[in-house]
Length: 328
Image (cartoon, rainbow, N blue to C red; front, side, top):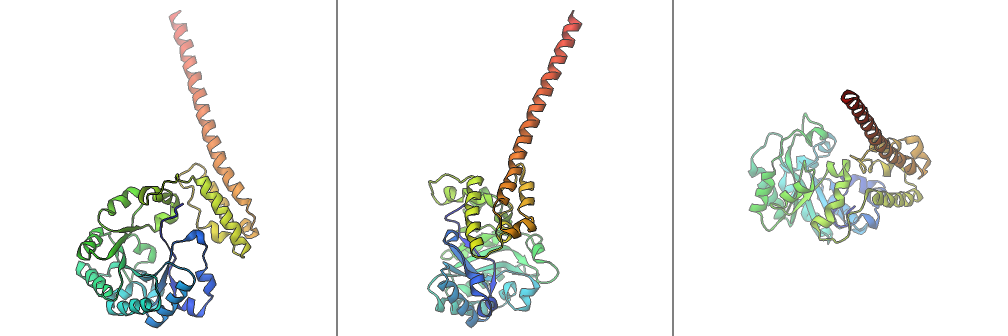
């Protein structure tokens, strides 16, 4: 859908890389580039080793997550709780910068729990910037460490976009991007009047076709916006290559279920591509069956429209006959 939008991985912990299956966590294809590896951790030495692995596997950026509020992450003393220790974050950033030649960036919230003062996030950014970090991605909500689930933490704490705008004004030499609750490219346009970049999270996942207009609107690309059918064809080619590598087909389709969101028949398309028994066979004709629901929906809609027209004409003719009878 986009050749210029920057893709961020889900957060990968340092332990998963240092003691787990590195290829499983880090392998990606050239079609996905540019890609940033988002790391979770709080030990400078472990983060440095993990960042080095990311560079070796071809990532374009290493991003330290200081925004995840889940309890599991808190138990590991990283994620959003790191915002309470800005000097430790600075030490982590410095260790990673010393280990790699690619950019090291930080994604964070604007506050933790009941801390509402702008000065909290300002001082956090200032301390980490002193360690050499030049790019900050600001999820413009507080992180509530106790009492809210990760999902609720993405929805309940109020958005304060002005905090991100103020960071850009206070640190004009830094690259500040904004994240949180952004759904449309018109909203992206508005935010770009105040900051350097915009991150789409849930919206890009649940309504991915929003990304199809990014390159022409923001990156000066002169290529036409791809259709959903063209995107699906590319997805099938990607799935075929992944199947050859031993990937479960559902691991591909579950991330693309929103492709036809808003299109007639999309529910049937999603239902077919969520059938675990069919997915387990690795049979790519499942896409043909899923697509039939889109055609069927279009045909049914067209048929209903024709039926309505016929019914309306019949009613008009009957009215004309009655009028004629009354006139006679």
